Image (tube, rainbow, N blue to C red; front, side, top):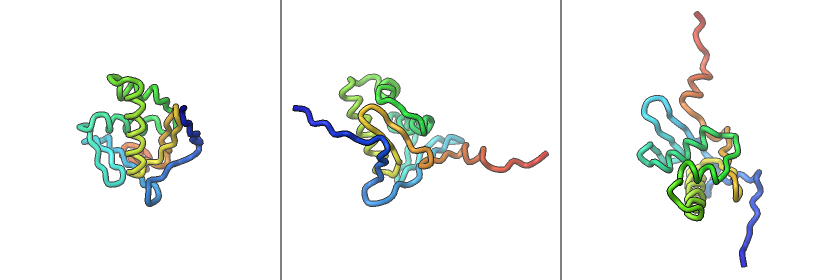
Length: 127
């Protein structure tokens, strides 16, 4: 017997014990991602790649199959799906606002900022 739980696509999961926090992506200079108390660098290859890809595709629906192919290509489908669930769980604990169901994942666009986006939004001096 298989137990199936339906998750609504519009459900945003906040971290336990409080509201979601902002995720900050640094792409200028030394690359890093700050989420809650975590400071990720490219040395955490899969975690960093997972979060960076979600940020790059923020607001777009990403299939778990795509994440499997890009981040966990060396794992079986079962193991990759487990790893994706674990990554989602870990980032939610840190405050990332992730919407997901059994097949897709989205990072809420307003829950993440990036240094280069902030730079582009600044007023430019007139010539």
